[in-house]
Length: 315
Image 1 (tube, rainbow, N blue to C red):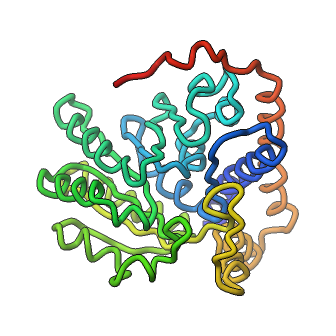
Image 2: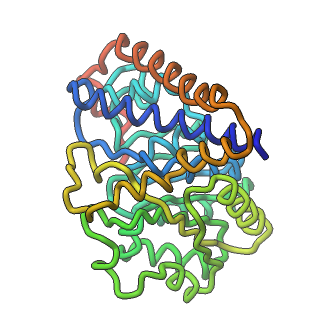
């Protein structure tokens, strides 16, 4: 168990280090445009993506860098995409909020809140007819639960018993609005349950629990058990977007969140289990070095050709 937790810590640090480097490059102006970071939410992708196979399809929200990394997207072309370089996973056309890497099972982000849900349902339906039998997973935040398209997607998936995993990262903030002010019933699992699908709420800071839960639900979906909904109770340690000062938070909230965020929890558990401080620190150091090398290589790559901006566009 210690070995798995240490591996999870390394994987979470790769995402954290990537996001922090992206944040720094936004500050210097190297990365431009809208950027949404998943700092504090790394356990979700690390735990859930190990339950997905090569044929399965993942659709993320605009806060999707971590999910792309967890699906196996290499760091250099991913960073190059954020930097608008020709070597990016989409040739520099997608940027932070629209990137995709289908060759790694990551079928893209979407800046329309909740829009990935109906697309994932379509991918699962296609899998029923093309012989792949793929499981489709869609990731969205708690705010997306108030979007009609999400409910329509869940209802269709339940009615057709499609293998779709609806993964809701509940970080308690619908952009800048606390969930308590957005809904009367904060028990989000009540909604998919009413549609007739399995729905669970779990600790979104525990990659082991997420892995076991999503694996079980994915296997059930493959066997014809239909869709499932997983609410990952988590938190983001940064603003909704880069530049958001998140002054709307209550006093002491961030301090409490830093105590229960996944990397802090993993470090405590490993220390209590007797893993050396040097080995724990190496997980961070190795990740930061890997990310730095990827960033420096991407920064040296040529910028995307503006004349190609209209290529690879479908309507």
